[in-house]
Amino acid sequence: MQAQTVQRADARRNRGLILEAAKAAFARDGIDASLDEVARSAGVGPGTLYRHFPTREHLLCELLHERQTVLLSNRDKAAALSCAKTALLTWMAELKDYLSAFNGLPRSFVKAMEAQTSPLAVTCQTLISITEEFLSRAQADGAARPSVAPQALFFSVLGAAFVHDKVREYGAAPESVDEILAYGYLADDSTKNAHESIEHSATRHSAIKHSAIGSNPK
Amino acid sequence: MQAQTVQRADARRNRGLILEAAKAAFARDGIDASLDEVARSAGVGPGTLYRHFPTREHLLCELLHERQTVLLSNRDKAAALSCAKTALLTWMAELKDYLSAFNGLPRSFVKAMEAQTSPLAVTCQTLISITEEFLSRAQADGAARPSVAPQALFFSVLGAAFVHDKVREYGAAPESVDEILAYGYLADDSTKNAHESIEHSATRHSAIKHSAIGSNPK
DNA sequence: ATCTATTCGGAGGATATCTCCGTTTTCCGG
DNA sequence: CCGGAAAACGGAGATATCCTCCGAATAGAT
Image (cartoon, rainbow over the protein chains, first blue to last red):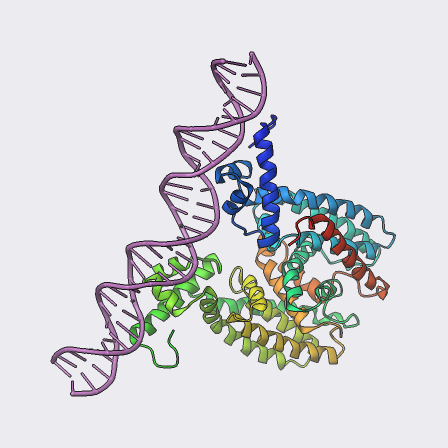
């Protein structure tokens, strides 16, 4: 790794070559692209790649910086919107797009959320914080439901991003999923008494899971 | 494969052993568990495993049959509910639970939807059809939004199932994501004029994506 | 021009997927 | 009960990926 000191010229050059090759490979094959292949197409040895980027996540994180710059500038544009609801909707669209940058990217983010050691973890926290800003503003404005938590919302976008590419390939409208996320699948005017049915069902579900697969302890 | 004729005694026995071992391995390590390891713990050679189940999906599909039986019986219970809304909510919970049976299962399903050759593809179609039943009924009842398409709803559940385990591990309430899916993150009483903002944002988003990554043509 | 710290590159060990084919097992007809 | 053909087994091995280790090469300071 290059620590805090200045790195040698060849090191700097190779780093750039690797990033370029990785960007192409990830864009083409998704984040599971072979790293040895990336090294090969960058014209360096595997050792060089792993010295610069110890894990796939480090490499990914570096590639996302570029995107992140765009995302943050769009955050500002969205934040400048006068309508809190439109601002939130806009941010959500930007966020989902960012999370769909590479095929399989949501999986990396989700993994990063359970392992704080991942270099993507900080990014996650940042994104949740920003989401919270937009969400809070919309909630204060009465445009978003008060019981929605920023973490839950972020997870939901991750889910939407996860299916995003496949929805397109399947022929359905990608926005249809976004719309469900924003407005729900239930109608607005329903009474609230069916709410507990979800809990009930979920509880019953655990019981089912138990009896169905619980035959192997630990 | 065992074609239509009866298979030999040892073949039948090994098939059972493999399924048992695979169930344990998938439950423990998720659907990416090593198949050679499954074969080893089943006490058979790799060749035997691959002769019985040519691909990981074939094996997975067979393992899901058991779950599917439970799911279908629960479908009937849910369908018997008098309230269309509660019925839909219940089905959605059952479905999500089914799709969370193994860690990483949603990825397989999503893959199956773009490759019709996968043995899971039929299952997908079945699940979408059932979802459509519940959805249509709720829509006729005014309990679900008319513009929601069954495919989009299914994709949304896949997204929710994808993050399900991680939400739990993260410490947030798993139901929070379900709630967002059902009711949306926006408030009920908003006017509809922000609707087009989504489209607008999406369009603008594509433009962003273009300029950000469009440097490598095909 | 020399020397040293840095960086490189690729051989190689570990693990996983999937195939091929010689060997073993089942079970049917005699 | 007993061949023998068909069915099934199993594991060696070809290929791919990840990641490490260390002798060789190189940049850049003196």
